[in-house]
Image (cartoon, rainbow over all chains, first blue to last red; front, top):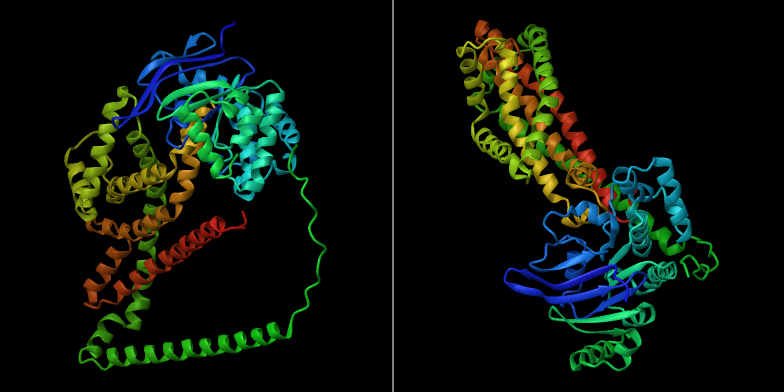
Length: 249
Length: 294
């Protein structure tokens, strides 16, 4: 077994005395796609935010490629260069065009030349069918287009790991598939990803590994097929049945 | 798969205005004419009533003689206008300085590094103190207090000292406006910038400040309209600006019409500014609306 790209061990996170994460362990190998499933408030988003150091862990540790990123001396800006993140609410910068959104970090943080960064951004936009939107402002785009731009923006920094936090939850059903499409394409390109998602059908389809979180505990992990067809834990089964009943599967 | 492979739109149907719509528009036009006429009539009646009330009041002849004397007005106007030019200059120089002070103070209040604690404390103290002191009091304190220190290189020109007092007072207000703007940018914008690897300073410069400044332009313009008329407070230090010139003239004749001349000049400058603020606010509103242009 080779060293995992990301390893989390015994991660705890409290908010105002409430334990959101209770000793979560997680290994993610290079090129692996891991889906986090679980009810709202089970800690999926918090885990992703801890990995990206948007939250500081209250206990435990996280390593990226063998180096501890939760070390108080670690430079969070350096760590985030290797970890891209896409948010549920897109969080594009409304005062910048699509192209400016994508090239901001490459130019200002990674010191690429502007025309090189723009060329690369245009390649990515073309690949995801957004080339004609480069000069538009985000509020002129549909939700699905905005979210795809957000993915491109994260990818423009060439991250080694991509975190996707319920990226389809804010979208109209007819727009969900276009965002799923580009995530699927990233998987085919070998991108390592952790997704928090409510889309069980999508999780089953794209994930190598599925993790079920329940009240801050990583209760069960296994190959997607096994989790969805024969979950070991009664809580997992109950959750999946509930979701199935609401016709999301 | 990618998007854009949607089914084609249904064939275009030509729109021929229906009889119902033509009737409706005709009625709307008639109603429009009617409400216009109504507005005009009620305005005329209102003005007539107010005019009658004022001119029929027992003191009106006396007020008319002391405040609305045409000869006094034309006699004092050149001097008052000349003085007003000083108000405009104080305003034009103070305004950019205030913007810089306000922004720096607002930024200093946002510093989280423990190293900068004294700066942060100073910024908080500055806004607290200078927002609390009435501007006219500050003009007195700065105008008479600073020269009394007899420091080397201290300006003695009352217009400069008065301008300095205005900068101190308005800088505190503008700092609070900037701070409100910075705070109004949603935390998710910072999170997105940080997750791209931008540090705190670059997040502020490229993501937070541009959005904050755009949002505070209307309130800032509002403060500037107010600054523009508060330049008259400098009069208490004695420089020959509009209010002081009006005082001099009315001291000669015991007629107050020169004050009216000064008032007219101030209004002539603030009204366009107020309309410009409205225009900007309306444009921002249109942009927020669905399908708004850029």
